[in-house]
Length: 538
Image 1 (cartoon, rainbow, N blue to C red):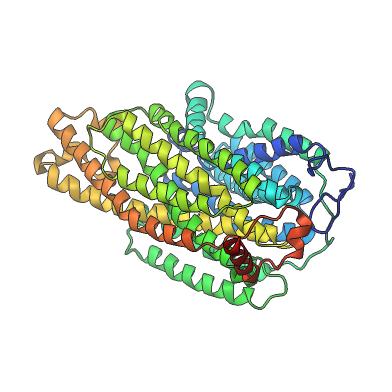
Image 2 (cartoon, helix red, strand yellow):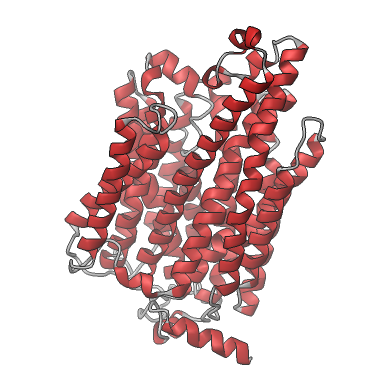
C-alpha cells in the first residue's frame, strides 16, 4: 500500500482528512496505537509476579534478574534509534516492524524451554517494545495538530499507570489459573490486531529511502546504557557497591557516555543530535520527567506494594489492587487537563501543580505508621496519580511543540530515553538507601537471639514475617516502616527542585496547525523565549 501524505509537516491536506482536521479512520488508528503502547508498557511489569514460577520451572534462579533486565535494556537502547530513524526515513514501516519484532520476541519467550531462550526472547521483545513506545507518540505528532494533541496524549499517559498495576496482576492470574506462558502469548493476538489495523488505516508521508546510520553513536550509546542499567540493577544486590564489577561498570559507563557525546558532535546524522539540547523547553521538561516521574513515581510504585504486604499483611494480589486508586487519579487529571490544554493552548500550569502535588504526596507518605488506615494509604495513591496525570504527557507535548516535524521523533525519544535512565538510577538509589536502613533497623530492633529466625534482608518475605511470634513480628514491621517511609521524606527536596524547574519552564503556546508549527522558530530555544514573552504581554 502506498503511503499518502497526512496533514503532517509540510505535507498539506489531502482527501484523507475529515472535517476536524484529523485523518479518516483516526479512531481506528488511535485504537491500534493505544494497543501497541499498552503491550509495550505491560511487558515491563507483567513477569514480576510470575518470575518465581518461571525460574523454578526452567531451573534458572541464578539468572532471574535478566528476565526483566533484558527487556528494559533493549527497550531503552532502542528508543533513540527508533526516534531518529523515524524522522529520517518515515515511521509507518518502522512501527509495523517494531510490532513484528515484539510479536516474534513474545512467541519465543512463551515457547522457551530454558532460561537462555527466555532471556533472548525478552531482549527481542524489548527491541520491539521500545519502538512501540516511541513511534506511537511520534505518529500522533505526525497526524494530530499540536493544539489537539493533548486530548490524545493524555490517555497514553494513563496507559503507563494502568500497566504498572494491571501487569503484575495479570501475570499472577495467568500463573495461578492458566500458564505463565500466557503472559507472553497474550501479546500475539493483540499485536496481530494492532499490526493489521495500522497496516490498513495508517497513512504517513514518505521520506528518504535511505539514511546515514550513526553506527558508532548507536554502539557507544548501547555500551553506556548497558553499563548504567547493570550498575543500577546489580549494585547492592548481585554485587556489593564496592565490588570491582560495579566499579568497573560505573567507570565504563562514564567513559562510554563521554565518548558517545563526543561522537554525536561530529557525525553527519547523530542518533541524538546535540542541537536538541539548545531548546530550553526540551532540557527543562526532560529534567522534570527524570526527577518527578522517572525517580519519584517508579520508586514509590516499586516499594509500596511490598510495604502493604509486610506492614498490613496483604496478599500480593491485594497489594496490587490497592494501587488502582493511583490509576484512577491519573485518568481523573490527565484527560480533563488534556481537554483544557487543547482549548487554551497553554500547558505550563499543569507541570507546576502536578509537581507540587507529587511532592506533597511524598511528604504525606513519609508520615505513614503501621496503624495508619488503609483507606488513607489509598487516598495518598489517588493523590500521587492525580499529580502524575497532570504532567506525564504534558511534558512530552511541550517538547513536541518546540520542534519541527523533522525532529519530533528524535526529541520525543530522547525525552523518554532520559526519563528511563532517571527511573533506573533513581529506583536503584532508593533501593540502596532503603536496604541500608532496613539492615540497621533490624539490627537495633530484633534481639540477637532471634536474628536467625528473622533472617537477613534478602530472605525476608511477607509470609515469613507473619508467621513470626507477635513480638518479633512487630519488631520487623516497625523496622520495615522506619526503613522505608523516611526515604519518601528524603525525596521531597528533589521534588522541590522539580517544582522550581516547572516554574521556569518556558511556555510556548501550542500551534493550531502543523503549518503554523513548521513556520515558527522551533527546536533551538529561541522561539521558546519569544513565545513566553508574547504570553506575558497577553
